[in-house]
Amino acid sequence: MHIFTDIQAAPPDPIYNLTTACNADPNPQKLNLGVGVYKDAAGHIPVLDTVKTAEQRILTDEDTKNYLPIDGTPDFGEAVRSLLLGVDHSLSTAPDSITLHTPGGTGALRLACELVAKNRSDTTVWLSDPTWTNHAQIAQQADLAVRTYPYLDAGTHSLLREKMFAAWATVPAGDVVLVHGCCHNPTGLDLEPDDWQRLAGLSRERGFQVLVDLAYQGFGRGLDLDAAGVRVLADAGLPTLIASSYSKNFGLYNERTGALTAFGFGPASNAMLSQLKVHARSLWSSPPAHGARIVSSILADRELRAAWTVELAAMRDRINEMRSLLAESMHHHGADRDFSFITRQYGLFSLTGIDAEANARMRADQSIYFMSTGRINVAGLTAATIEYFCQAYVATLN
Image 1 (tube, rainbow, N blue to C red):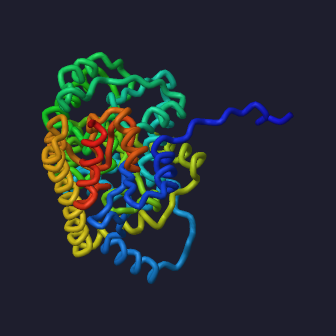
Image 2 (tube, one colour; image 1 turned 180 degrees about the vertical axis):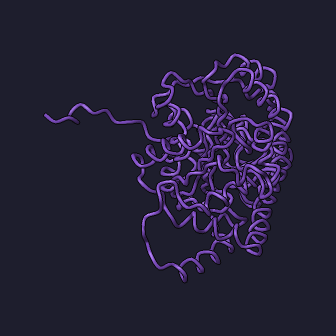
């Protein structure tokens, strides 16, 4: 007998399991539209030219592999806040604005939940319905309760705005409302500036904490517009936590580069920073260095930063092009519904409305892999594979 004699196997992660199944599929036409990564027109996950340039400089100048501080380096924090708030925003350099470098956006979310749980154990985290599948697990692993607020009207592929606001108006003081900063995963439907204003007002009135998950800045409407919600909260003087990721907009997936930023907390920020460092120390001790150095190097260099924004715009344009092409192709092939709603969404993902039965048949018959919820990664498509996808969908219906 040992302590693991009766251990039960955990269910496999649905997204990673999908990729495993796709990799093992011998069909040369197979498509993986499950995992959230940007792919170029050739279906390749590229390394950005600006990233390569920054890496070459880093490798030339690097003279140590010493640990980073627990909270990361000041230049990375400054770079993160300049993206979130803009270089000229007063909170970018305010002494009570703090940023901790984390292993990806996931690490930032977990760190935020740990901070909340250790200071108020009865807190509930409110998530959009639907949301990223990992959100609930992250909160629950920190021993926080989870509830949902209405978000998607699946019939009209639009936001349930008034129901969402009504739900927020019932959130108790001390709870956390988690919102997607842009490019909502899985729906692709984003809050508008007026929605953020109402969120700020309800947060102040009710006393709940806003936690923003900003994983796709620059993939939606642009760097500044994608951060408009964060800036509304900042300008309203609302204490806010932001978990940000640089996997997508810098293509640094395996570098695990993220950050947790807090602004508007005033004198409490020093105590928050000390507690966050304690939690980070027990979770990962010190953060990975390479990705943060890439981000800092690009954003600190005027020419590299300008070149990066051009590369980012090209990725965004390709995603939007695939959205338009997919909607047109579905119509051309005689799909059973109007898919033009896809063009009104932002970012990598679309919740297509393709049901689990059709999903299973497309996987079995045409080796097309995507979530049973109907979520697809639009950037996983190319001009060549869109035809295959649409033909497979229509054939499945018939």
